[in-house]
Length: 380
Image 1: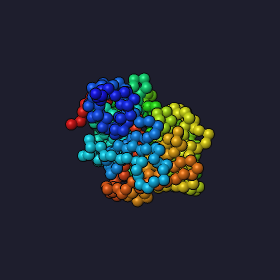
Image 2: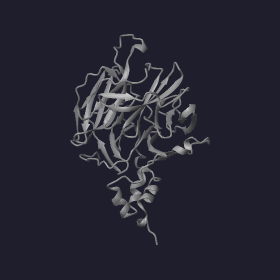
Image 3: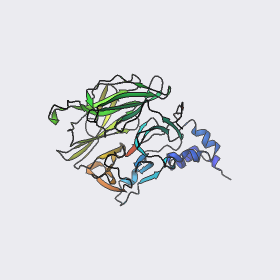
Image 4: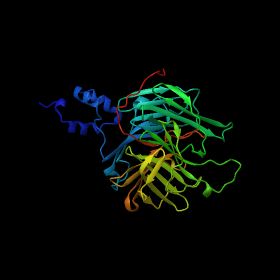
């Protein structure tokens, strides 16, 4: 008689690939062999046929699974997109999520707490602030390549607030301490343009800092990437982007491609078009881009807190965003030869108040890892 323990490794992987990331731990416990194996390697890792990650729905973190083969079929509804709430956080409202190396950094809606979470291992850690967190905080998660120490970047730089806000801090998850960074930025990073971490370093789309009393033509304001190197704990130089964005009308969003590349989605109001570009090499002090865009379409979409992912093999992109009023979630599938399809993901149950910001990013890619979270002091 064949038992669970007799199944081949390939078949085990096939079975676990159909299990939501956050439930793999429970499934592993059904068999000692599965549990022992998963402590040293990733089992059930998604293949090229599907995308796995997390989606923000009504200030809740949900697991998301996308059937890439089904995306391009001309069927109505959102069948290829599976979204399931995560019970573990059903009493916690999350407004921001950031991914690095299998870890997720989550910021709560009330701006009082940060949480680091490894969904694959089920480990969590609450991060206490040095003083307090702020609703305009920008965050990123990366690691020191020399020590493999994970660190959190927190900064706020806002001259429009009733009182000027300027704080740059870094948190070391090994020492469990915040430290102030000495930074004099010559750039601005808009609040709704979160950064992205690739190979341990974070990258942000930024614009030249201008004085409030200087009226300057939008076309004259430079735009570029800036990086943050967690090993050196400092920001890098301006990095070239293959497009020029206006201050307000145009939109830009970032995504990772695997664990080595960065993708940028750019929408140009003047030309009524969308382009997606992919890096060929990216490091804190230099970047190179593909000679031509990855995908392009003569359409624009409301990119309210929008996020996306691409699949290079299938030459497609999935963009998830809110409508112009922030009430409906929609997915847009973009493929070769101008292929364009819209999928309605439903109306938001929780509509942010006028003084609240909606969740971002709406879609976050995820690659499982065996990274252990150093617990240190825990918030009760």
